Image 1 (tube, rainbow, N blue to C red):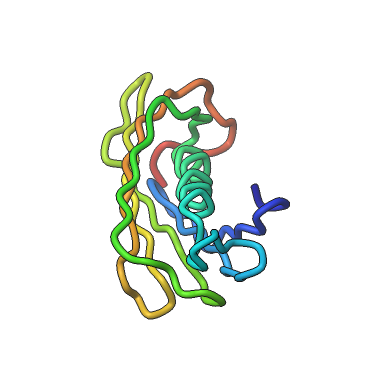
Image 2: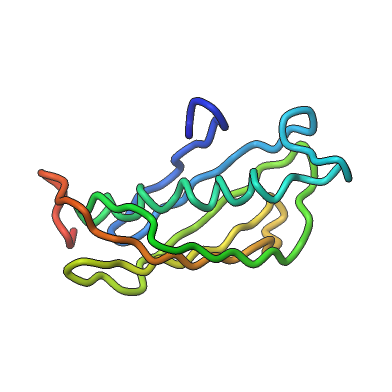
Length: 126
């Protein structure tokens, strides 16, 4: 995702992460000249694997829901902040919020993940 969309991992902490994307009109606008929802969904989805890894889990998405609240301004930066709400033996629930550079809430998401493997060297608590 980082090569295609140029998504940056800004911060990783135990049980969460922050990723961001600089929005560019020529790359990310839809036919109505607003940021395409698929671009924002890809940003939200990109935080999930990083969040799982923050507690030593390799995860895959079982289900994903996103609520769009506000349009995104062109030529700004959008960031997605995530937190684990449930970390079970075989599943994980991750929630997130998306903000623009003016700190306006743009979208929320919730995903159910399946824990498929442990990542050596990363503890579940740190």
